[in-house]
Structure formats: C-alpha cells, structure tokens
Length: 388
Image (cartoon, rainbow, N blue to C red; front, side, top):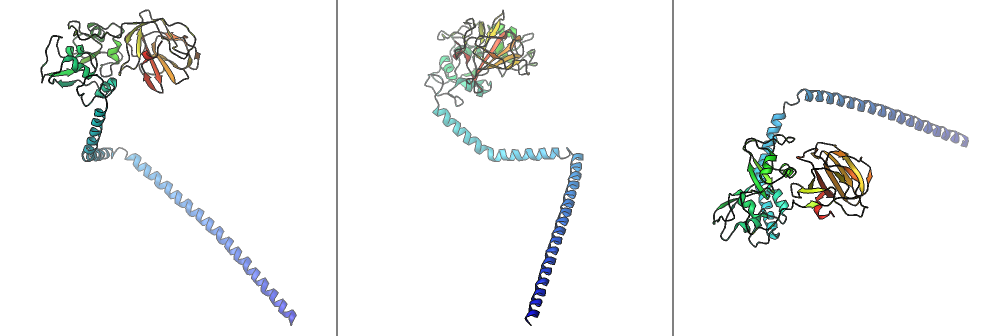
C-alpha cells in the first residue's frame, strides 16, 4: 500500500513538470509572435508615414509661393495691430526713462542752461544718435551764438556759417537757427563740382577730403568714384568759409595742422610709436574712429608695437583696401589701411618698428594716406591718446 502511494505522487509530480514546460513553451511562442507582430506593425506605420510625408512635400513643393502674399499680408496686419495697441505704452515708458537719464546726466558744456532732451554726456554719441539730422533751435532770452554753440558742442563759426550770419550779427528771441550735427559747412552741390573741388573751397587739401567721404551721412551715386548729384547737400566736416570772419571769442585752433614725428625702428616697450611720417589730415570722431596720416611722398608703414600679423592684404570689400592687422597680445590690436604694398604675411611676428608695407590709396580712399585704428576688446579707441 505504501509503495502504491509513492508511485502515484511521482506520476503527479511528472504531470506538473510537463504542464510547466508546456506553459513556458507557450509563453515563449507568444513572445516571439508579439515581437514579430510589433515589428511588422511598426514597419507598416513608418512606411505609411514616409509615403504620406513624401506626398505632402510634393504638394507643398508644387504649391510653393501660392500662399506667400496672404501670409505676408496677415503677418503685417498682425504686427500693425500689436504696434497700435501695445506700442504707445512701451514708447511712453522709454521716453520717461530717457528723460530721467538726461536729467540725471551732466551736459557736455560748462553752461548752466538746460540742454535739449536728446543730449547725453558724450558729444560723439549725441551726434551719432542724431543720425546726421539738422535740427532747428528757437532762440530764447539771453542766448548768444557762443552760448548756443556751447550747448550743442559746436564752434560758434559753424552756427554762423549755416545761418548766413557774421560775428556782428544780432540774434533775437524767437529767431530760428539751423544746428548742424558736427563742426563744418553744409554745401549744396553745383554743376561740375566734385568732392575735391568742394573740399578745396572750404580749406581742405587733397588728403583731408577723405573726411567728406568718411562722414556716414553723405551719399554718393557711386561709392568708388564718389559721384555727386547736382542739388544734393553734402556735409564738409571741419570745413571753413573763408569769406566769414570767426568770432573774436573763438580761440580754438584746428587740430589737423601738426606734423607727426618720424617713426624709427625701436625695441618693443609695450607702448605705441607713430606708424608713419606725415600730417594728420583727419582726426578721431564718431564717424571716423581712427586717424589719417598723409604724406605726398608716401613712405613705409611701421608696426606701432610688436605682435603677430593676423590679416595682410586686400581680403574683402570693406573699403580698407590693402590692410595689415597686428594683434599685440595684450588686448590691443592695430589696423593699417589703404596700403599700396603689403610686406608681411598673416601669422608673421613683427617687432616694434618693422616695416608692414607702403603708404597708398587703395580701397575707399581719396588720396595717399594711412588709416590707423587702435582697438581694445573690439572697441575703437583714439590713437592720439596712446601714440608716443
């Protein structure tokens, strides 16, 4: 009897093992089926998606440009709506902030009169923000030509010339005066005139005519030949009308008459030497953040300090023509433009006083001269503050 029970339990154990084996086999087969089915379905889905995408792209390609105008029209209407509804609030806020800044900032001159609301603490930036605009000034009680000129950071002669006045003219309250953005003369171009004849008329020599070209708000029919249109107005920075006497109160002398010292070969000392010999024909201003040194005999262009040449030659159409750029490794970079000949190559190391090339008139230039820039961290500095 005991033996029969043992055999029966063995048979039961064997049946359970067989059932488990069949169960695992079924699960494995089911898993294989699910995996195969999923791969098949995913493939079908992606295949359908690719076909749909191709058809959509074909339709869009065939219909390209059809909805461009409606899109632009609706976009313009939407932007206009936003400007009309939200613009006034932003403008009023910016105007109030600008007025607060003006009131908090000192004006350029030493005059105690209130400056115009466009004035800031830097004359160059003020002129730049004016965008070359000629503004009208209404004379107030007690104002004189000198006080008005001081307020706008100009010379009295500039206001006299623009308004056809002399140093003996009297101005009255309520009188309207035209105020130029920079010192000089505004000229209406006549038949047959060129920038050279206009420059000569107002006391600029051949190399100083470059100031007329560099002034950013002067326009030309051709930027290469500087062709003018009869009747257009041209600003002549630093120009002077010979027929009008300067006011007796004005004692300032032009800053473009001094000669630069000869630049010799010297050892690098961490400061800058003059890069060329000649006269300074154009100084540093908001529209010309460099100095121009002209010499009729041309001559060599020297490295103002030791460094590595990063650019050499006529590399683009920026107007520099042949130029050399030297990185001095201490945050300063110098640029030498309009060279007739370049005598260094990019990557070359130069010491202070080495010859970089010869003075010329390549690029956007009106005569033989050197355009010299001094940069620090991308900002253009006044070279006259650094040259020894």
